[in-house]
Length: 369
Image (cartoon, rainbow, N blue to C red):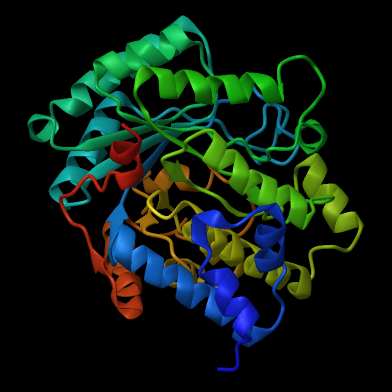
């Protein structure tokens, strides 16, 4: 593989890279250069977080949402979606299955609500989940923007990780992804991330990659945002169209969702994983299902590019087709046990092992303390 000395020197800079360096690596187009980037990132992953993939069993327990994000399939104004709420006992049963399957950690995800009924429901649900295995199941919440008081209540109940994607670090681009109604403010989302860090959560965020109007400089700024916000875990993936959303309709009308477009977004997604791994080193990075929506081996490619987290779906099968944030979502027709076996094979094919029964906390969280 022919790689220039200049590229090898750049790949070796790691956290010393500046914005221009990040843009250069994100913009690589030569196949050998891209492979050198992935290989360098995988080597850093092996050194800092290990050749281990940690599972976060994902329960999408409700698709009711008060927000109206212009790219999202479960946005409030999408009347084609059949809304659902998973029964509490079913959530607890799937959480117990997750623990017994050796996943180590669980992620609770839903559409966004901010009413007291929802807040109290999550608080009690967290307490019950923490009783499983005498607190042996790690727990991440991914339920949107809340007040700091709410975040504190959930932390006190036992949640210790929180995932809230910034979507983009560029406020102007963020504004194009959301209605301008006073309820979708970039500064509010940023301040939520700050509050989560103050409370003591392991804080996760991430972006969408390959958005209309997004530049390589925007993506480099996203990586710098992760650093400046002292983020512990990063869940980012390529943008995938949902045909019933305003952004999706605009992309389709412009003819910008061809196989070539999808391949470009896939390459950008892998580059973001790899460059983030080189730059931030000891954070957790997910190989998201959006990668697999664009390529059958997308999550394996993500692991090879430096990711170390997978989120197998344990949502009840009857609800999976109603929780589609984007089109062509993988694993919608599978049972939880099928997802478990499938992912184990994917991890083994990369040469990694599965961190069964482990929380898989990001080393960065402890290093910054």
